[in-house]
Length: 254
Image (cartoon, rainbow, N blue to C red):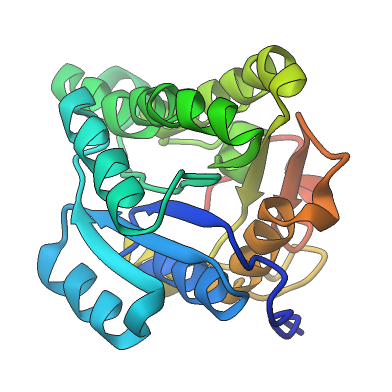
């Protein structure tokens, strides 16, 4: 059962949520606003992002952001600071998926997945760290995947990117801890989102918890890591996967 938002727990925090227009990012944005944060919904999906921001009211704005473009990140951070003040929470959620057998991988697809899923995370951290340092600290939550913990057949580009997110989260947490900036990763399993086809064709019968996850269950973990309740947590990798990884040591076919 998803936890109830803690009213005011994130009061005074300013967050950027990438890929915030739908799916897990939308759930993250809703949860953070519900807990008192001001949220920048950052996405390339302008119509959906603007509609969500309008629905959330004064607690949110929409900014178009291509996470693979450094200038776009600079503009997004400037917009956040102008609207709400220094960014103290970053949720690097944006991601794309590509399926192919290892001998059928398209190089252009590989590079695009890495640009969005991994380079985008690095650019996001680079963009917000100076402001977080000046503000006295903050929390960066990088959304990796169960595919960042165990191998997954046919998801070579995606798996490479998500293991990369896991790695840069660890190195950044070591580097930024003395600045009061916490960096951790979340590793969702199967979650009912548009990117995953809302779980169509996926089986969870052999998983410890035999069901698909809900975006709100990821959002609850994001809110915790963004909050001061997680003040002594950094470099963590949190599997929110219903036990998928526990039963997947020989690989996952999905």
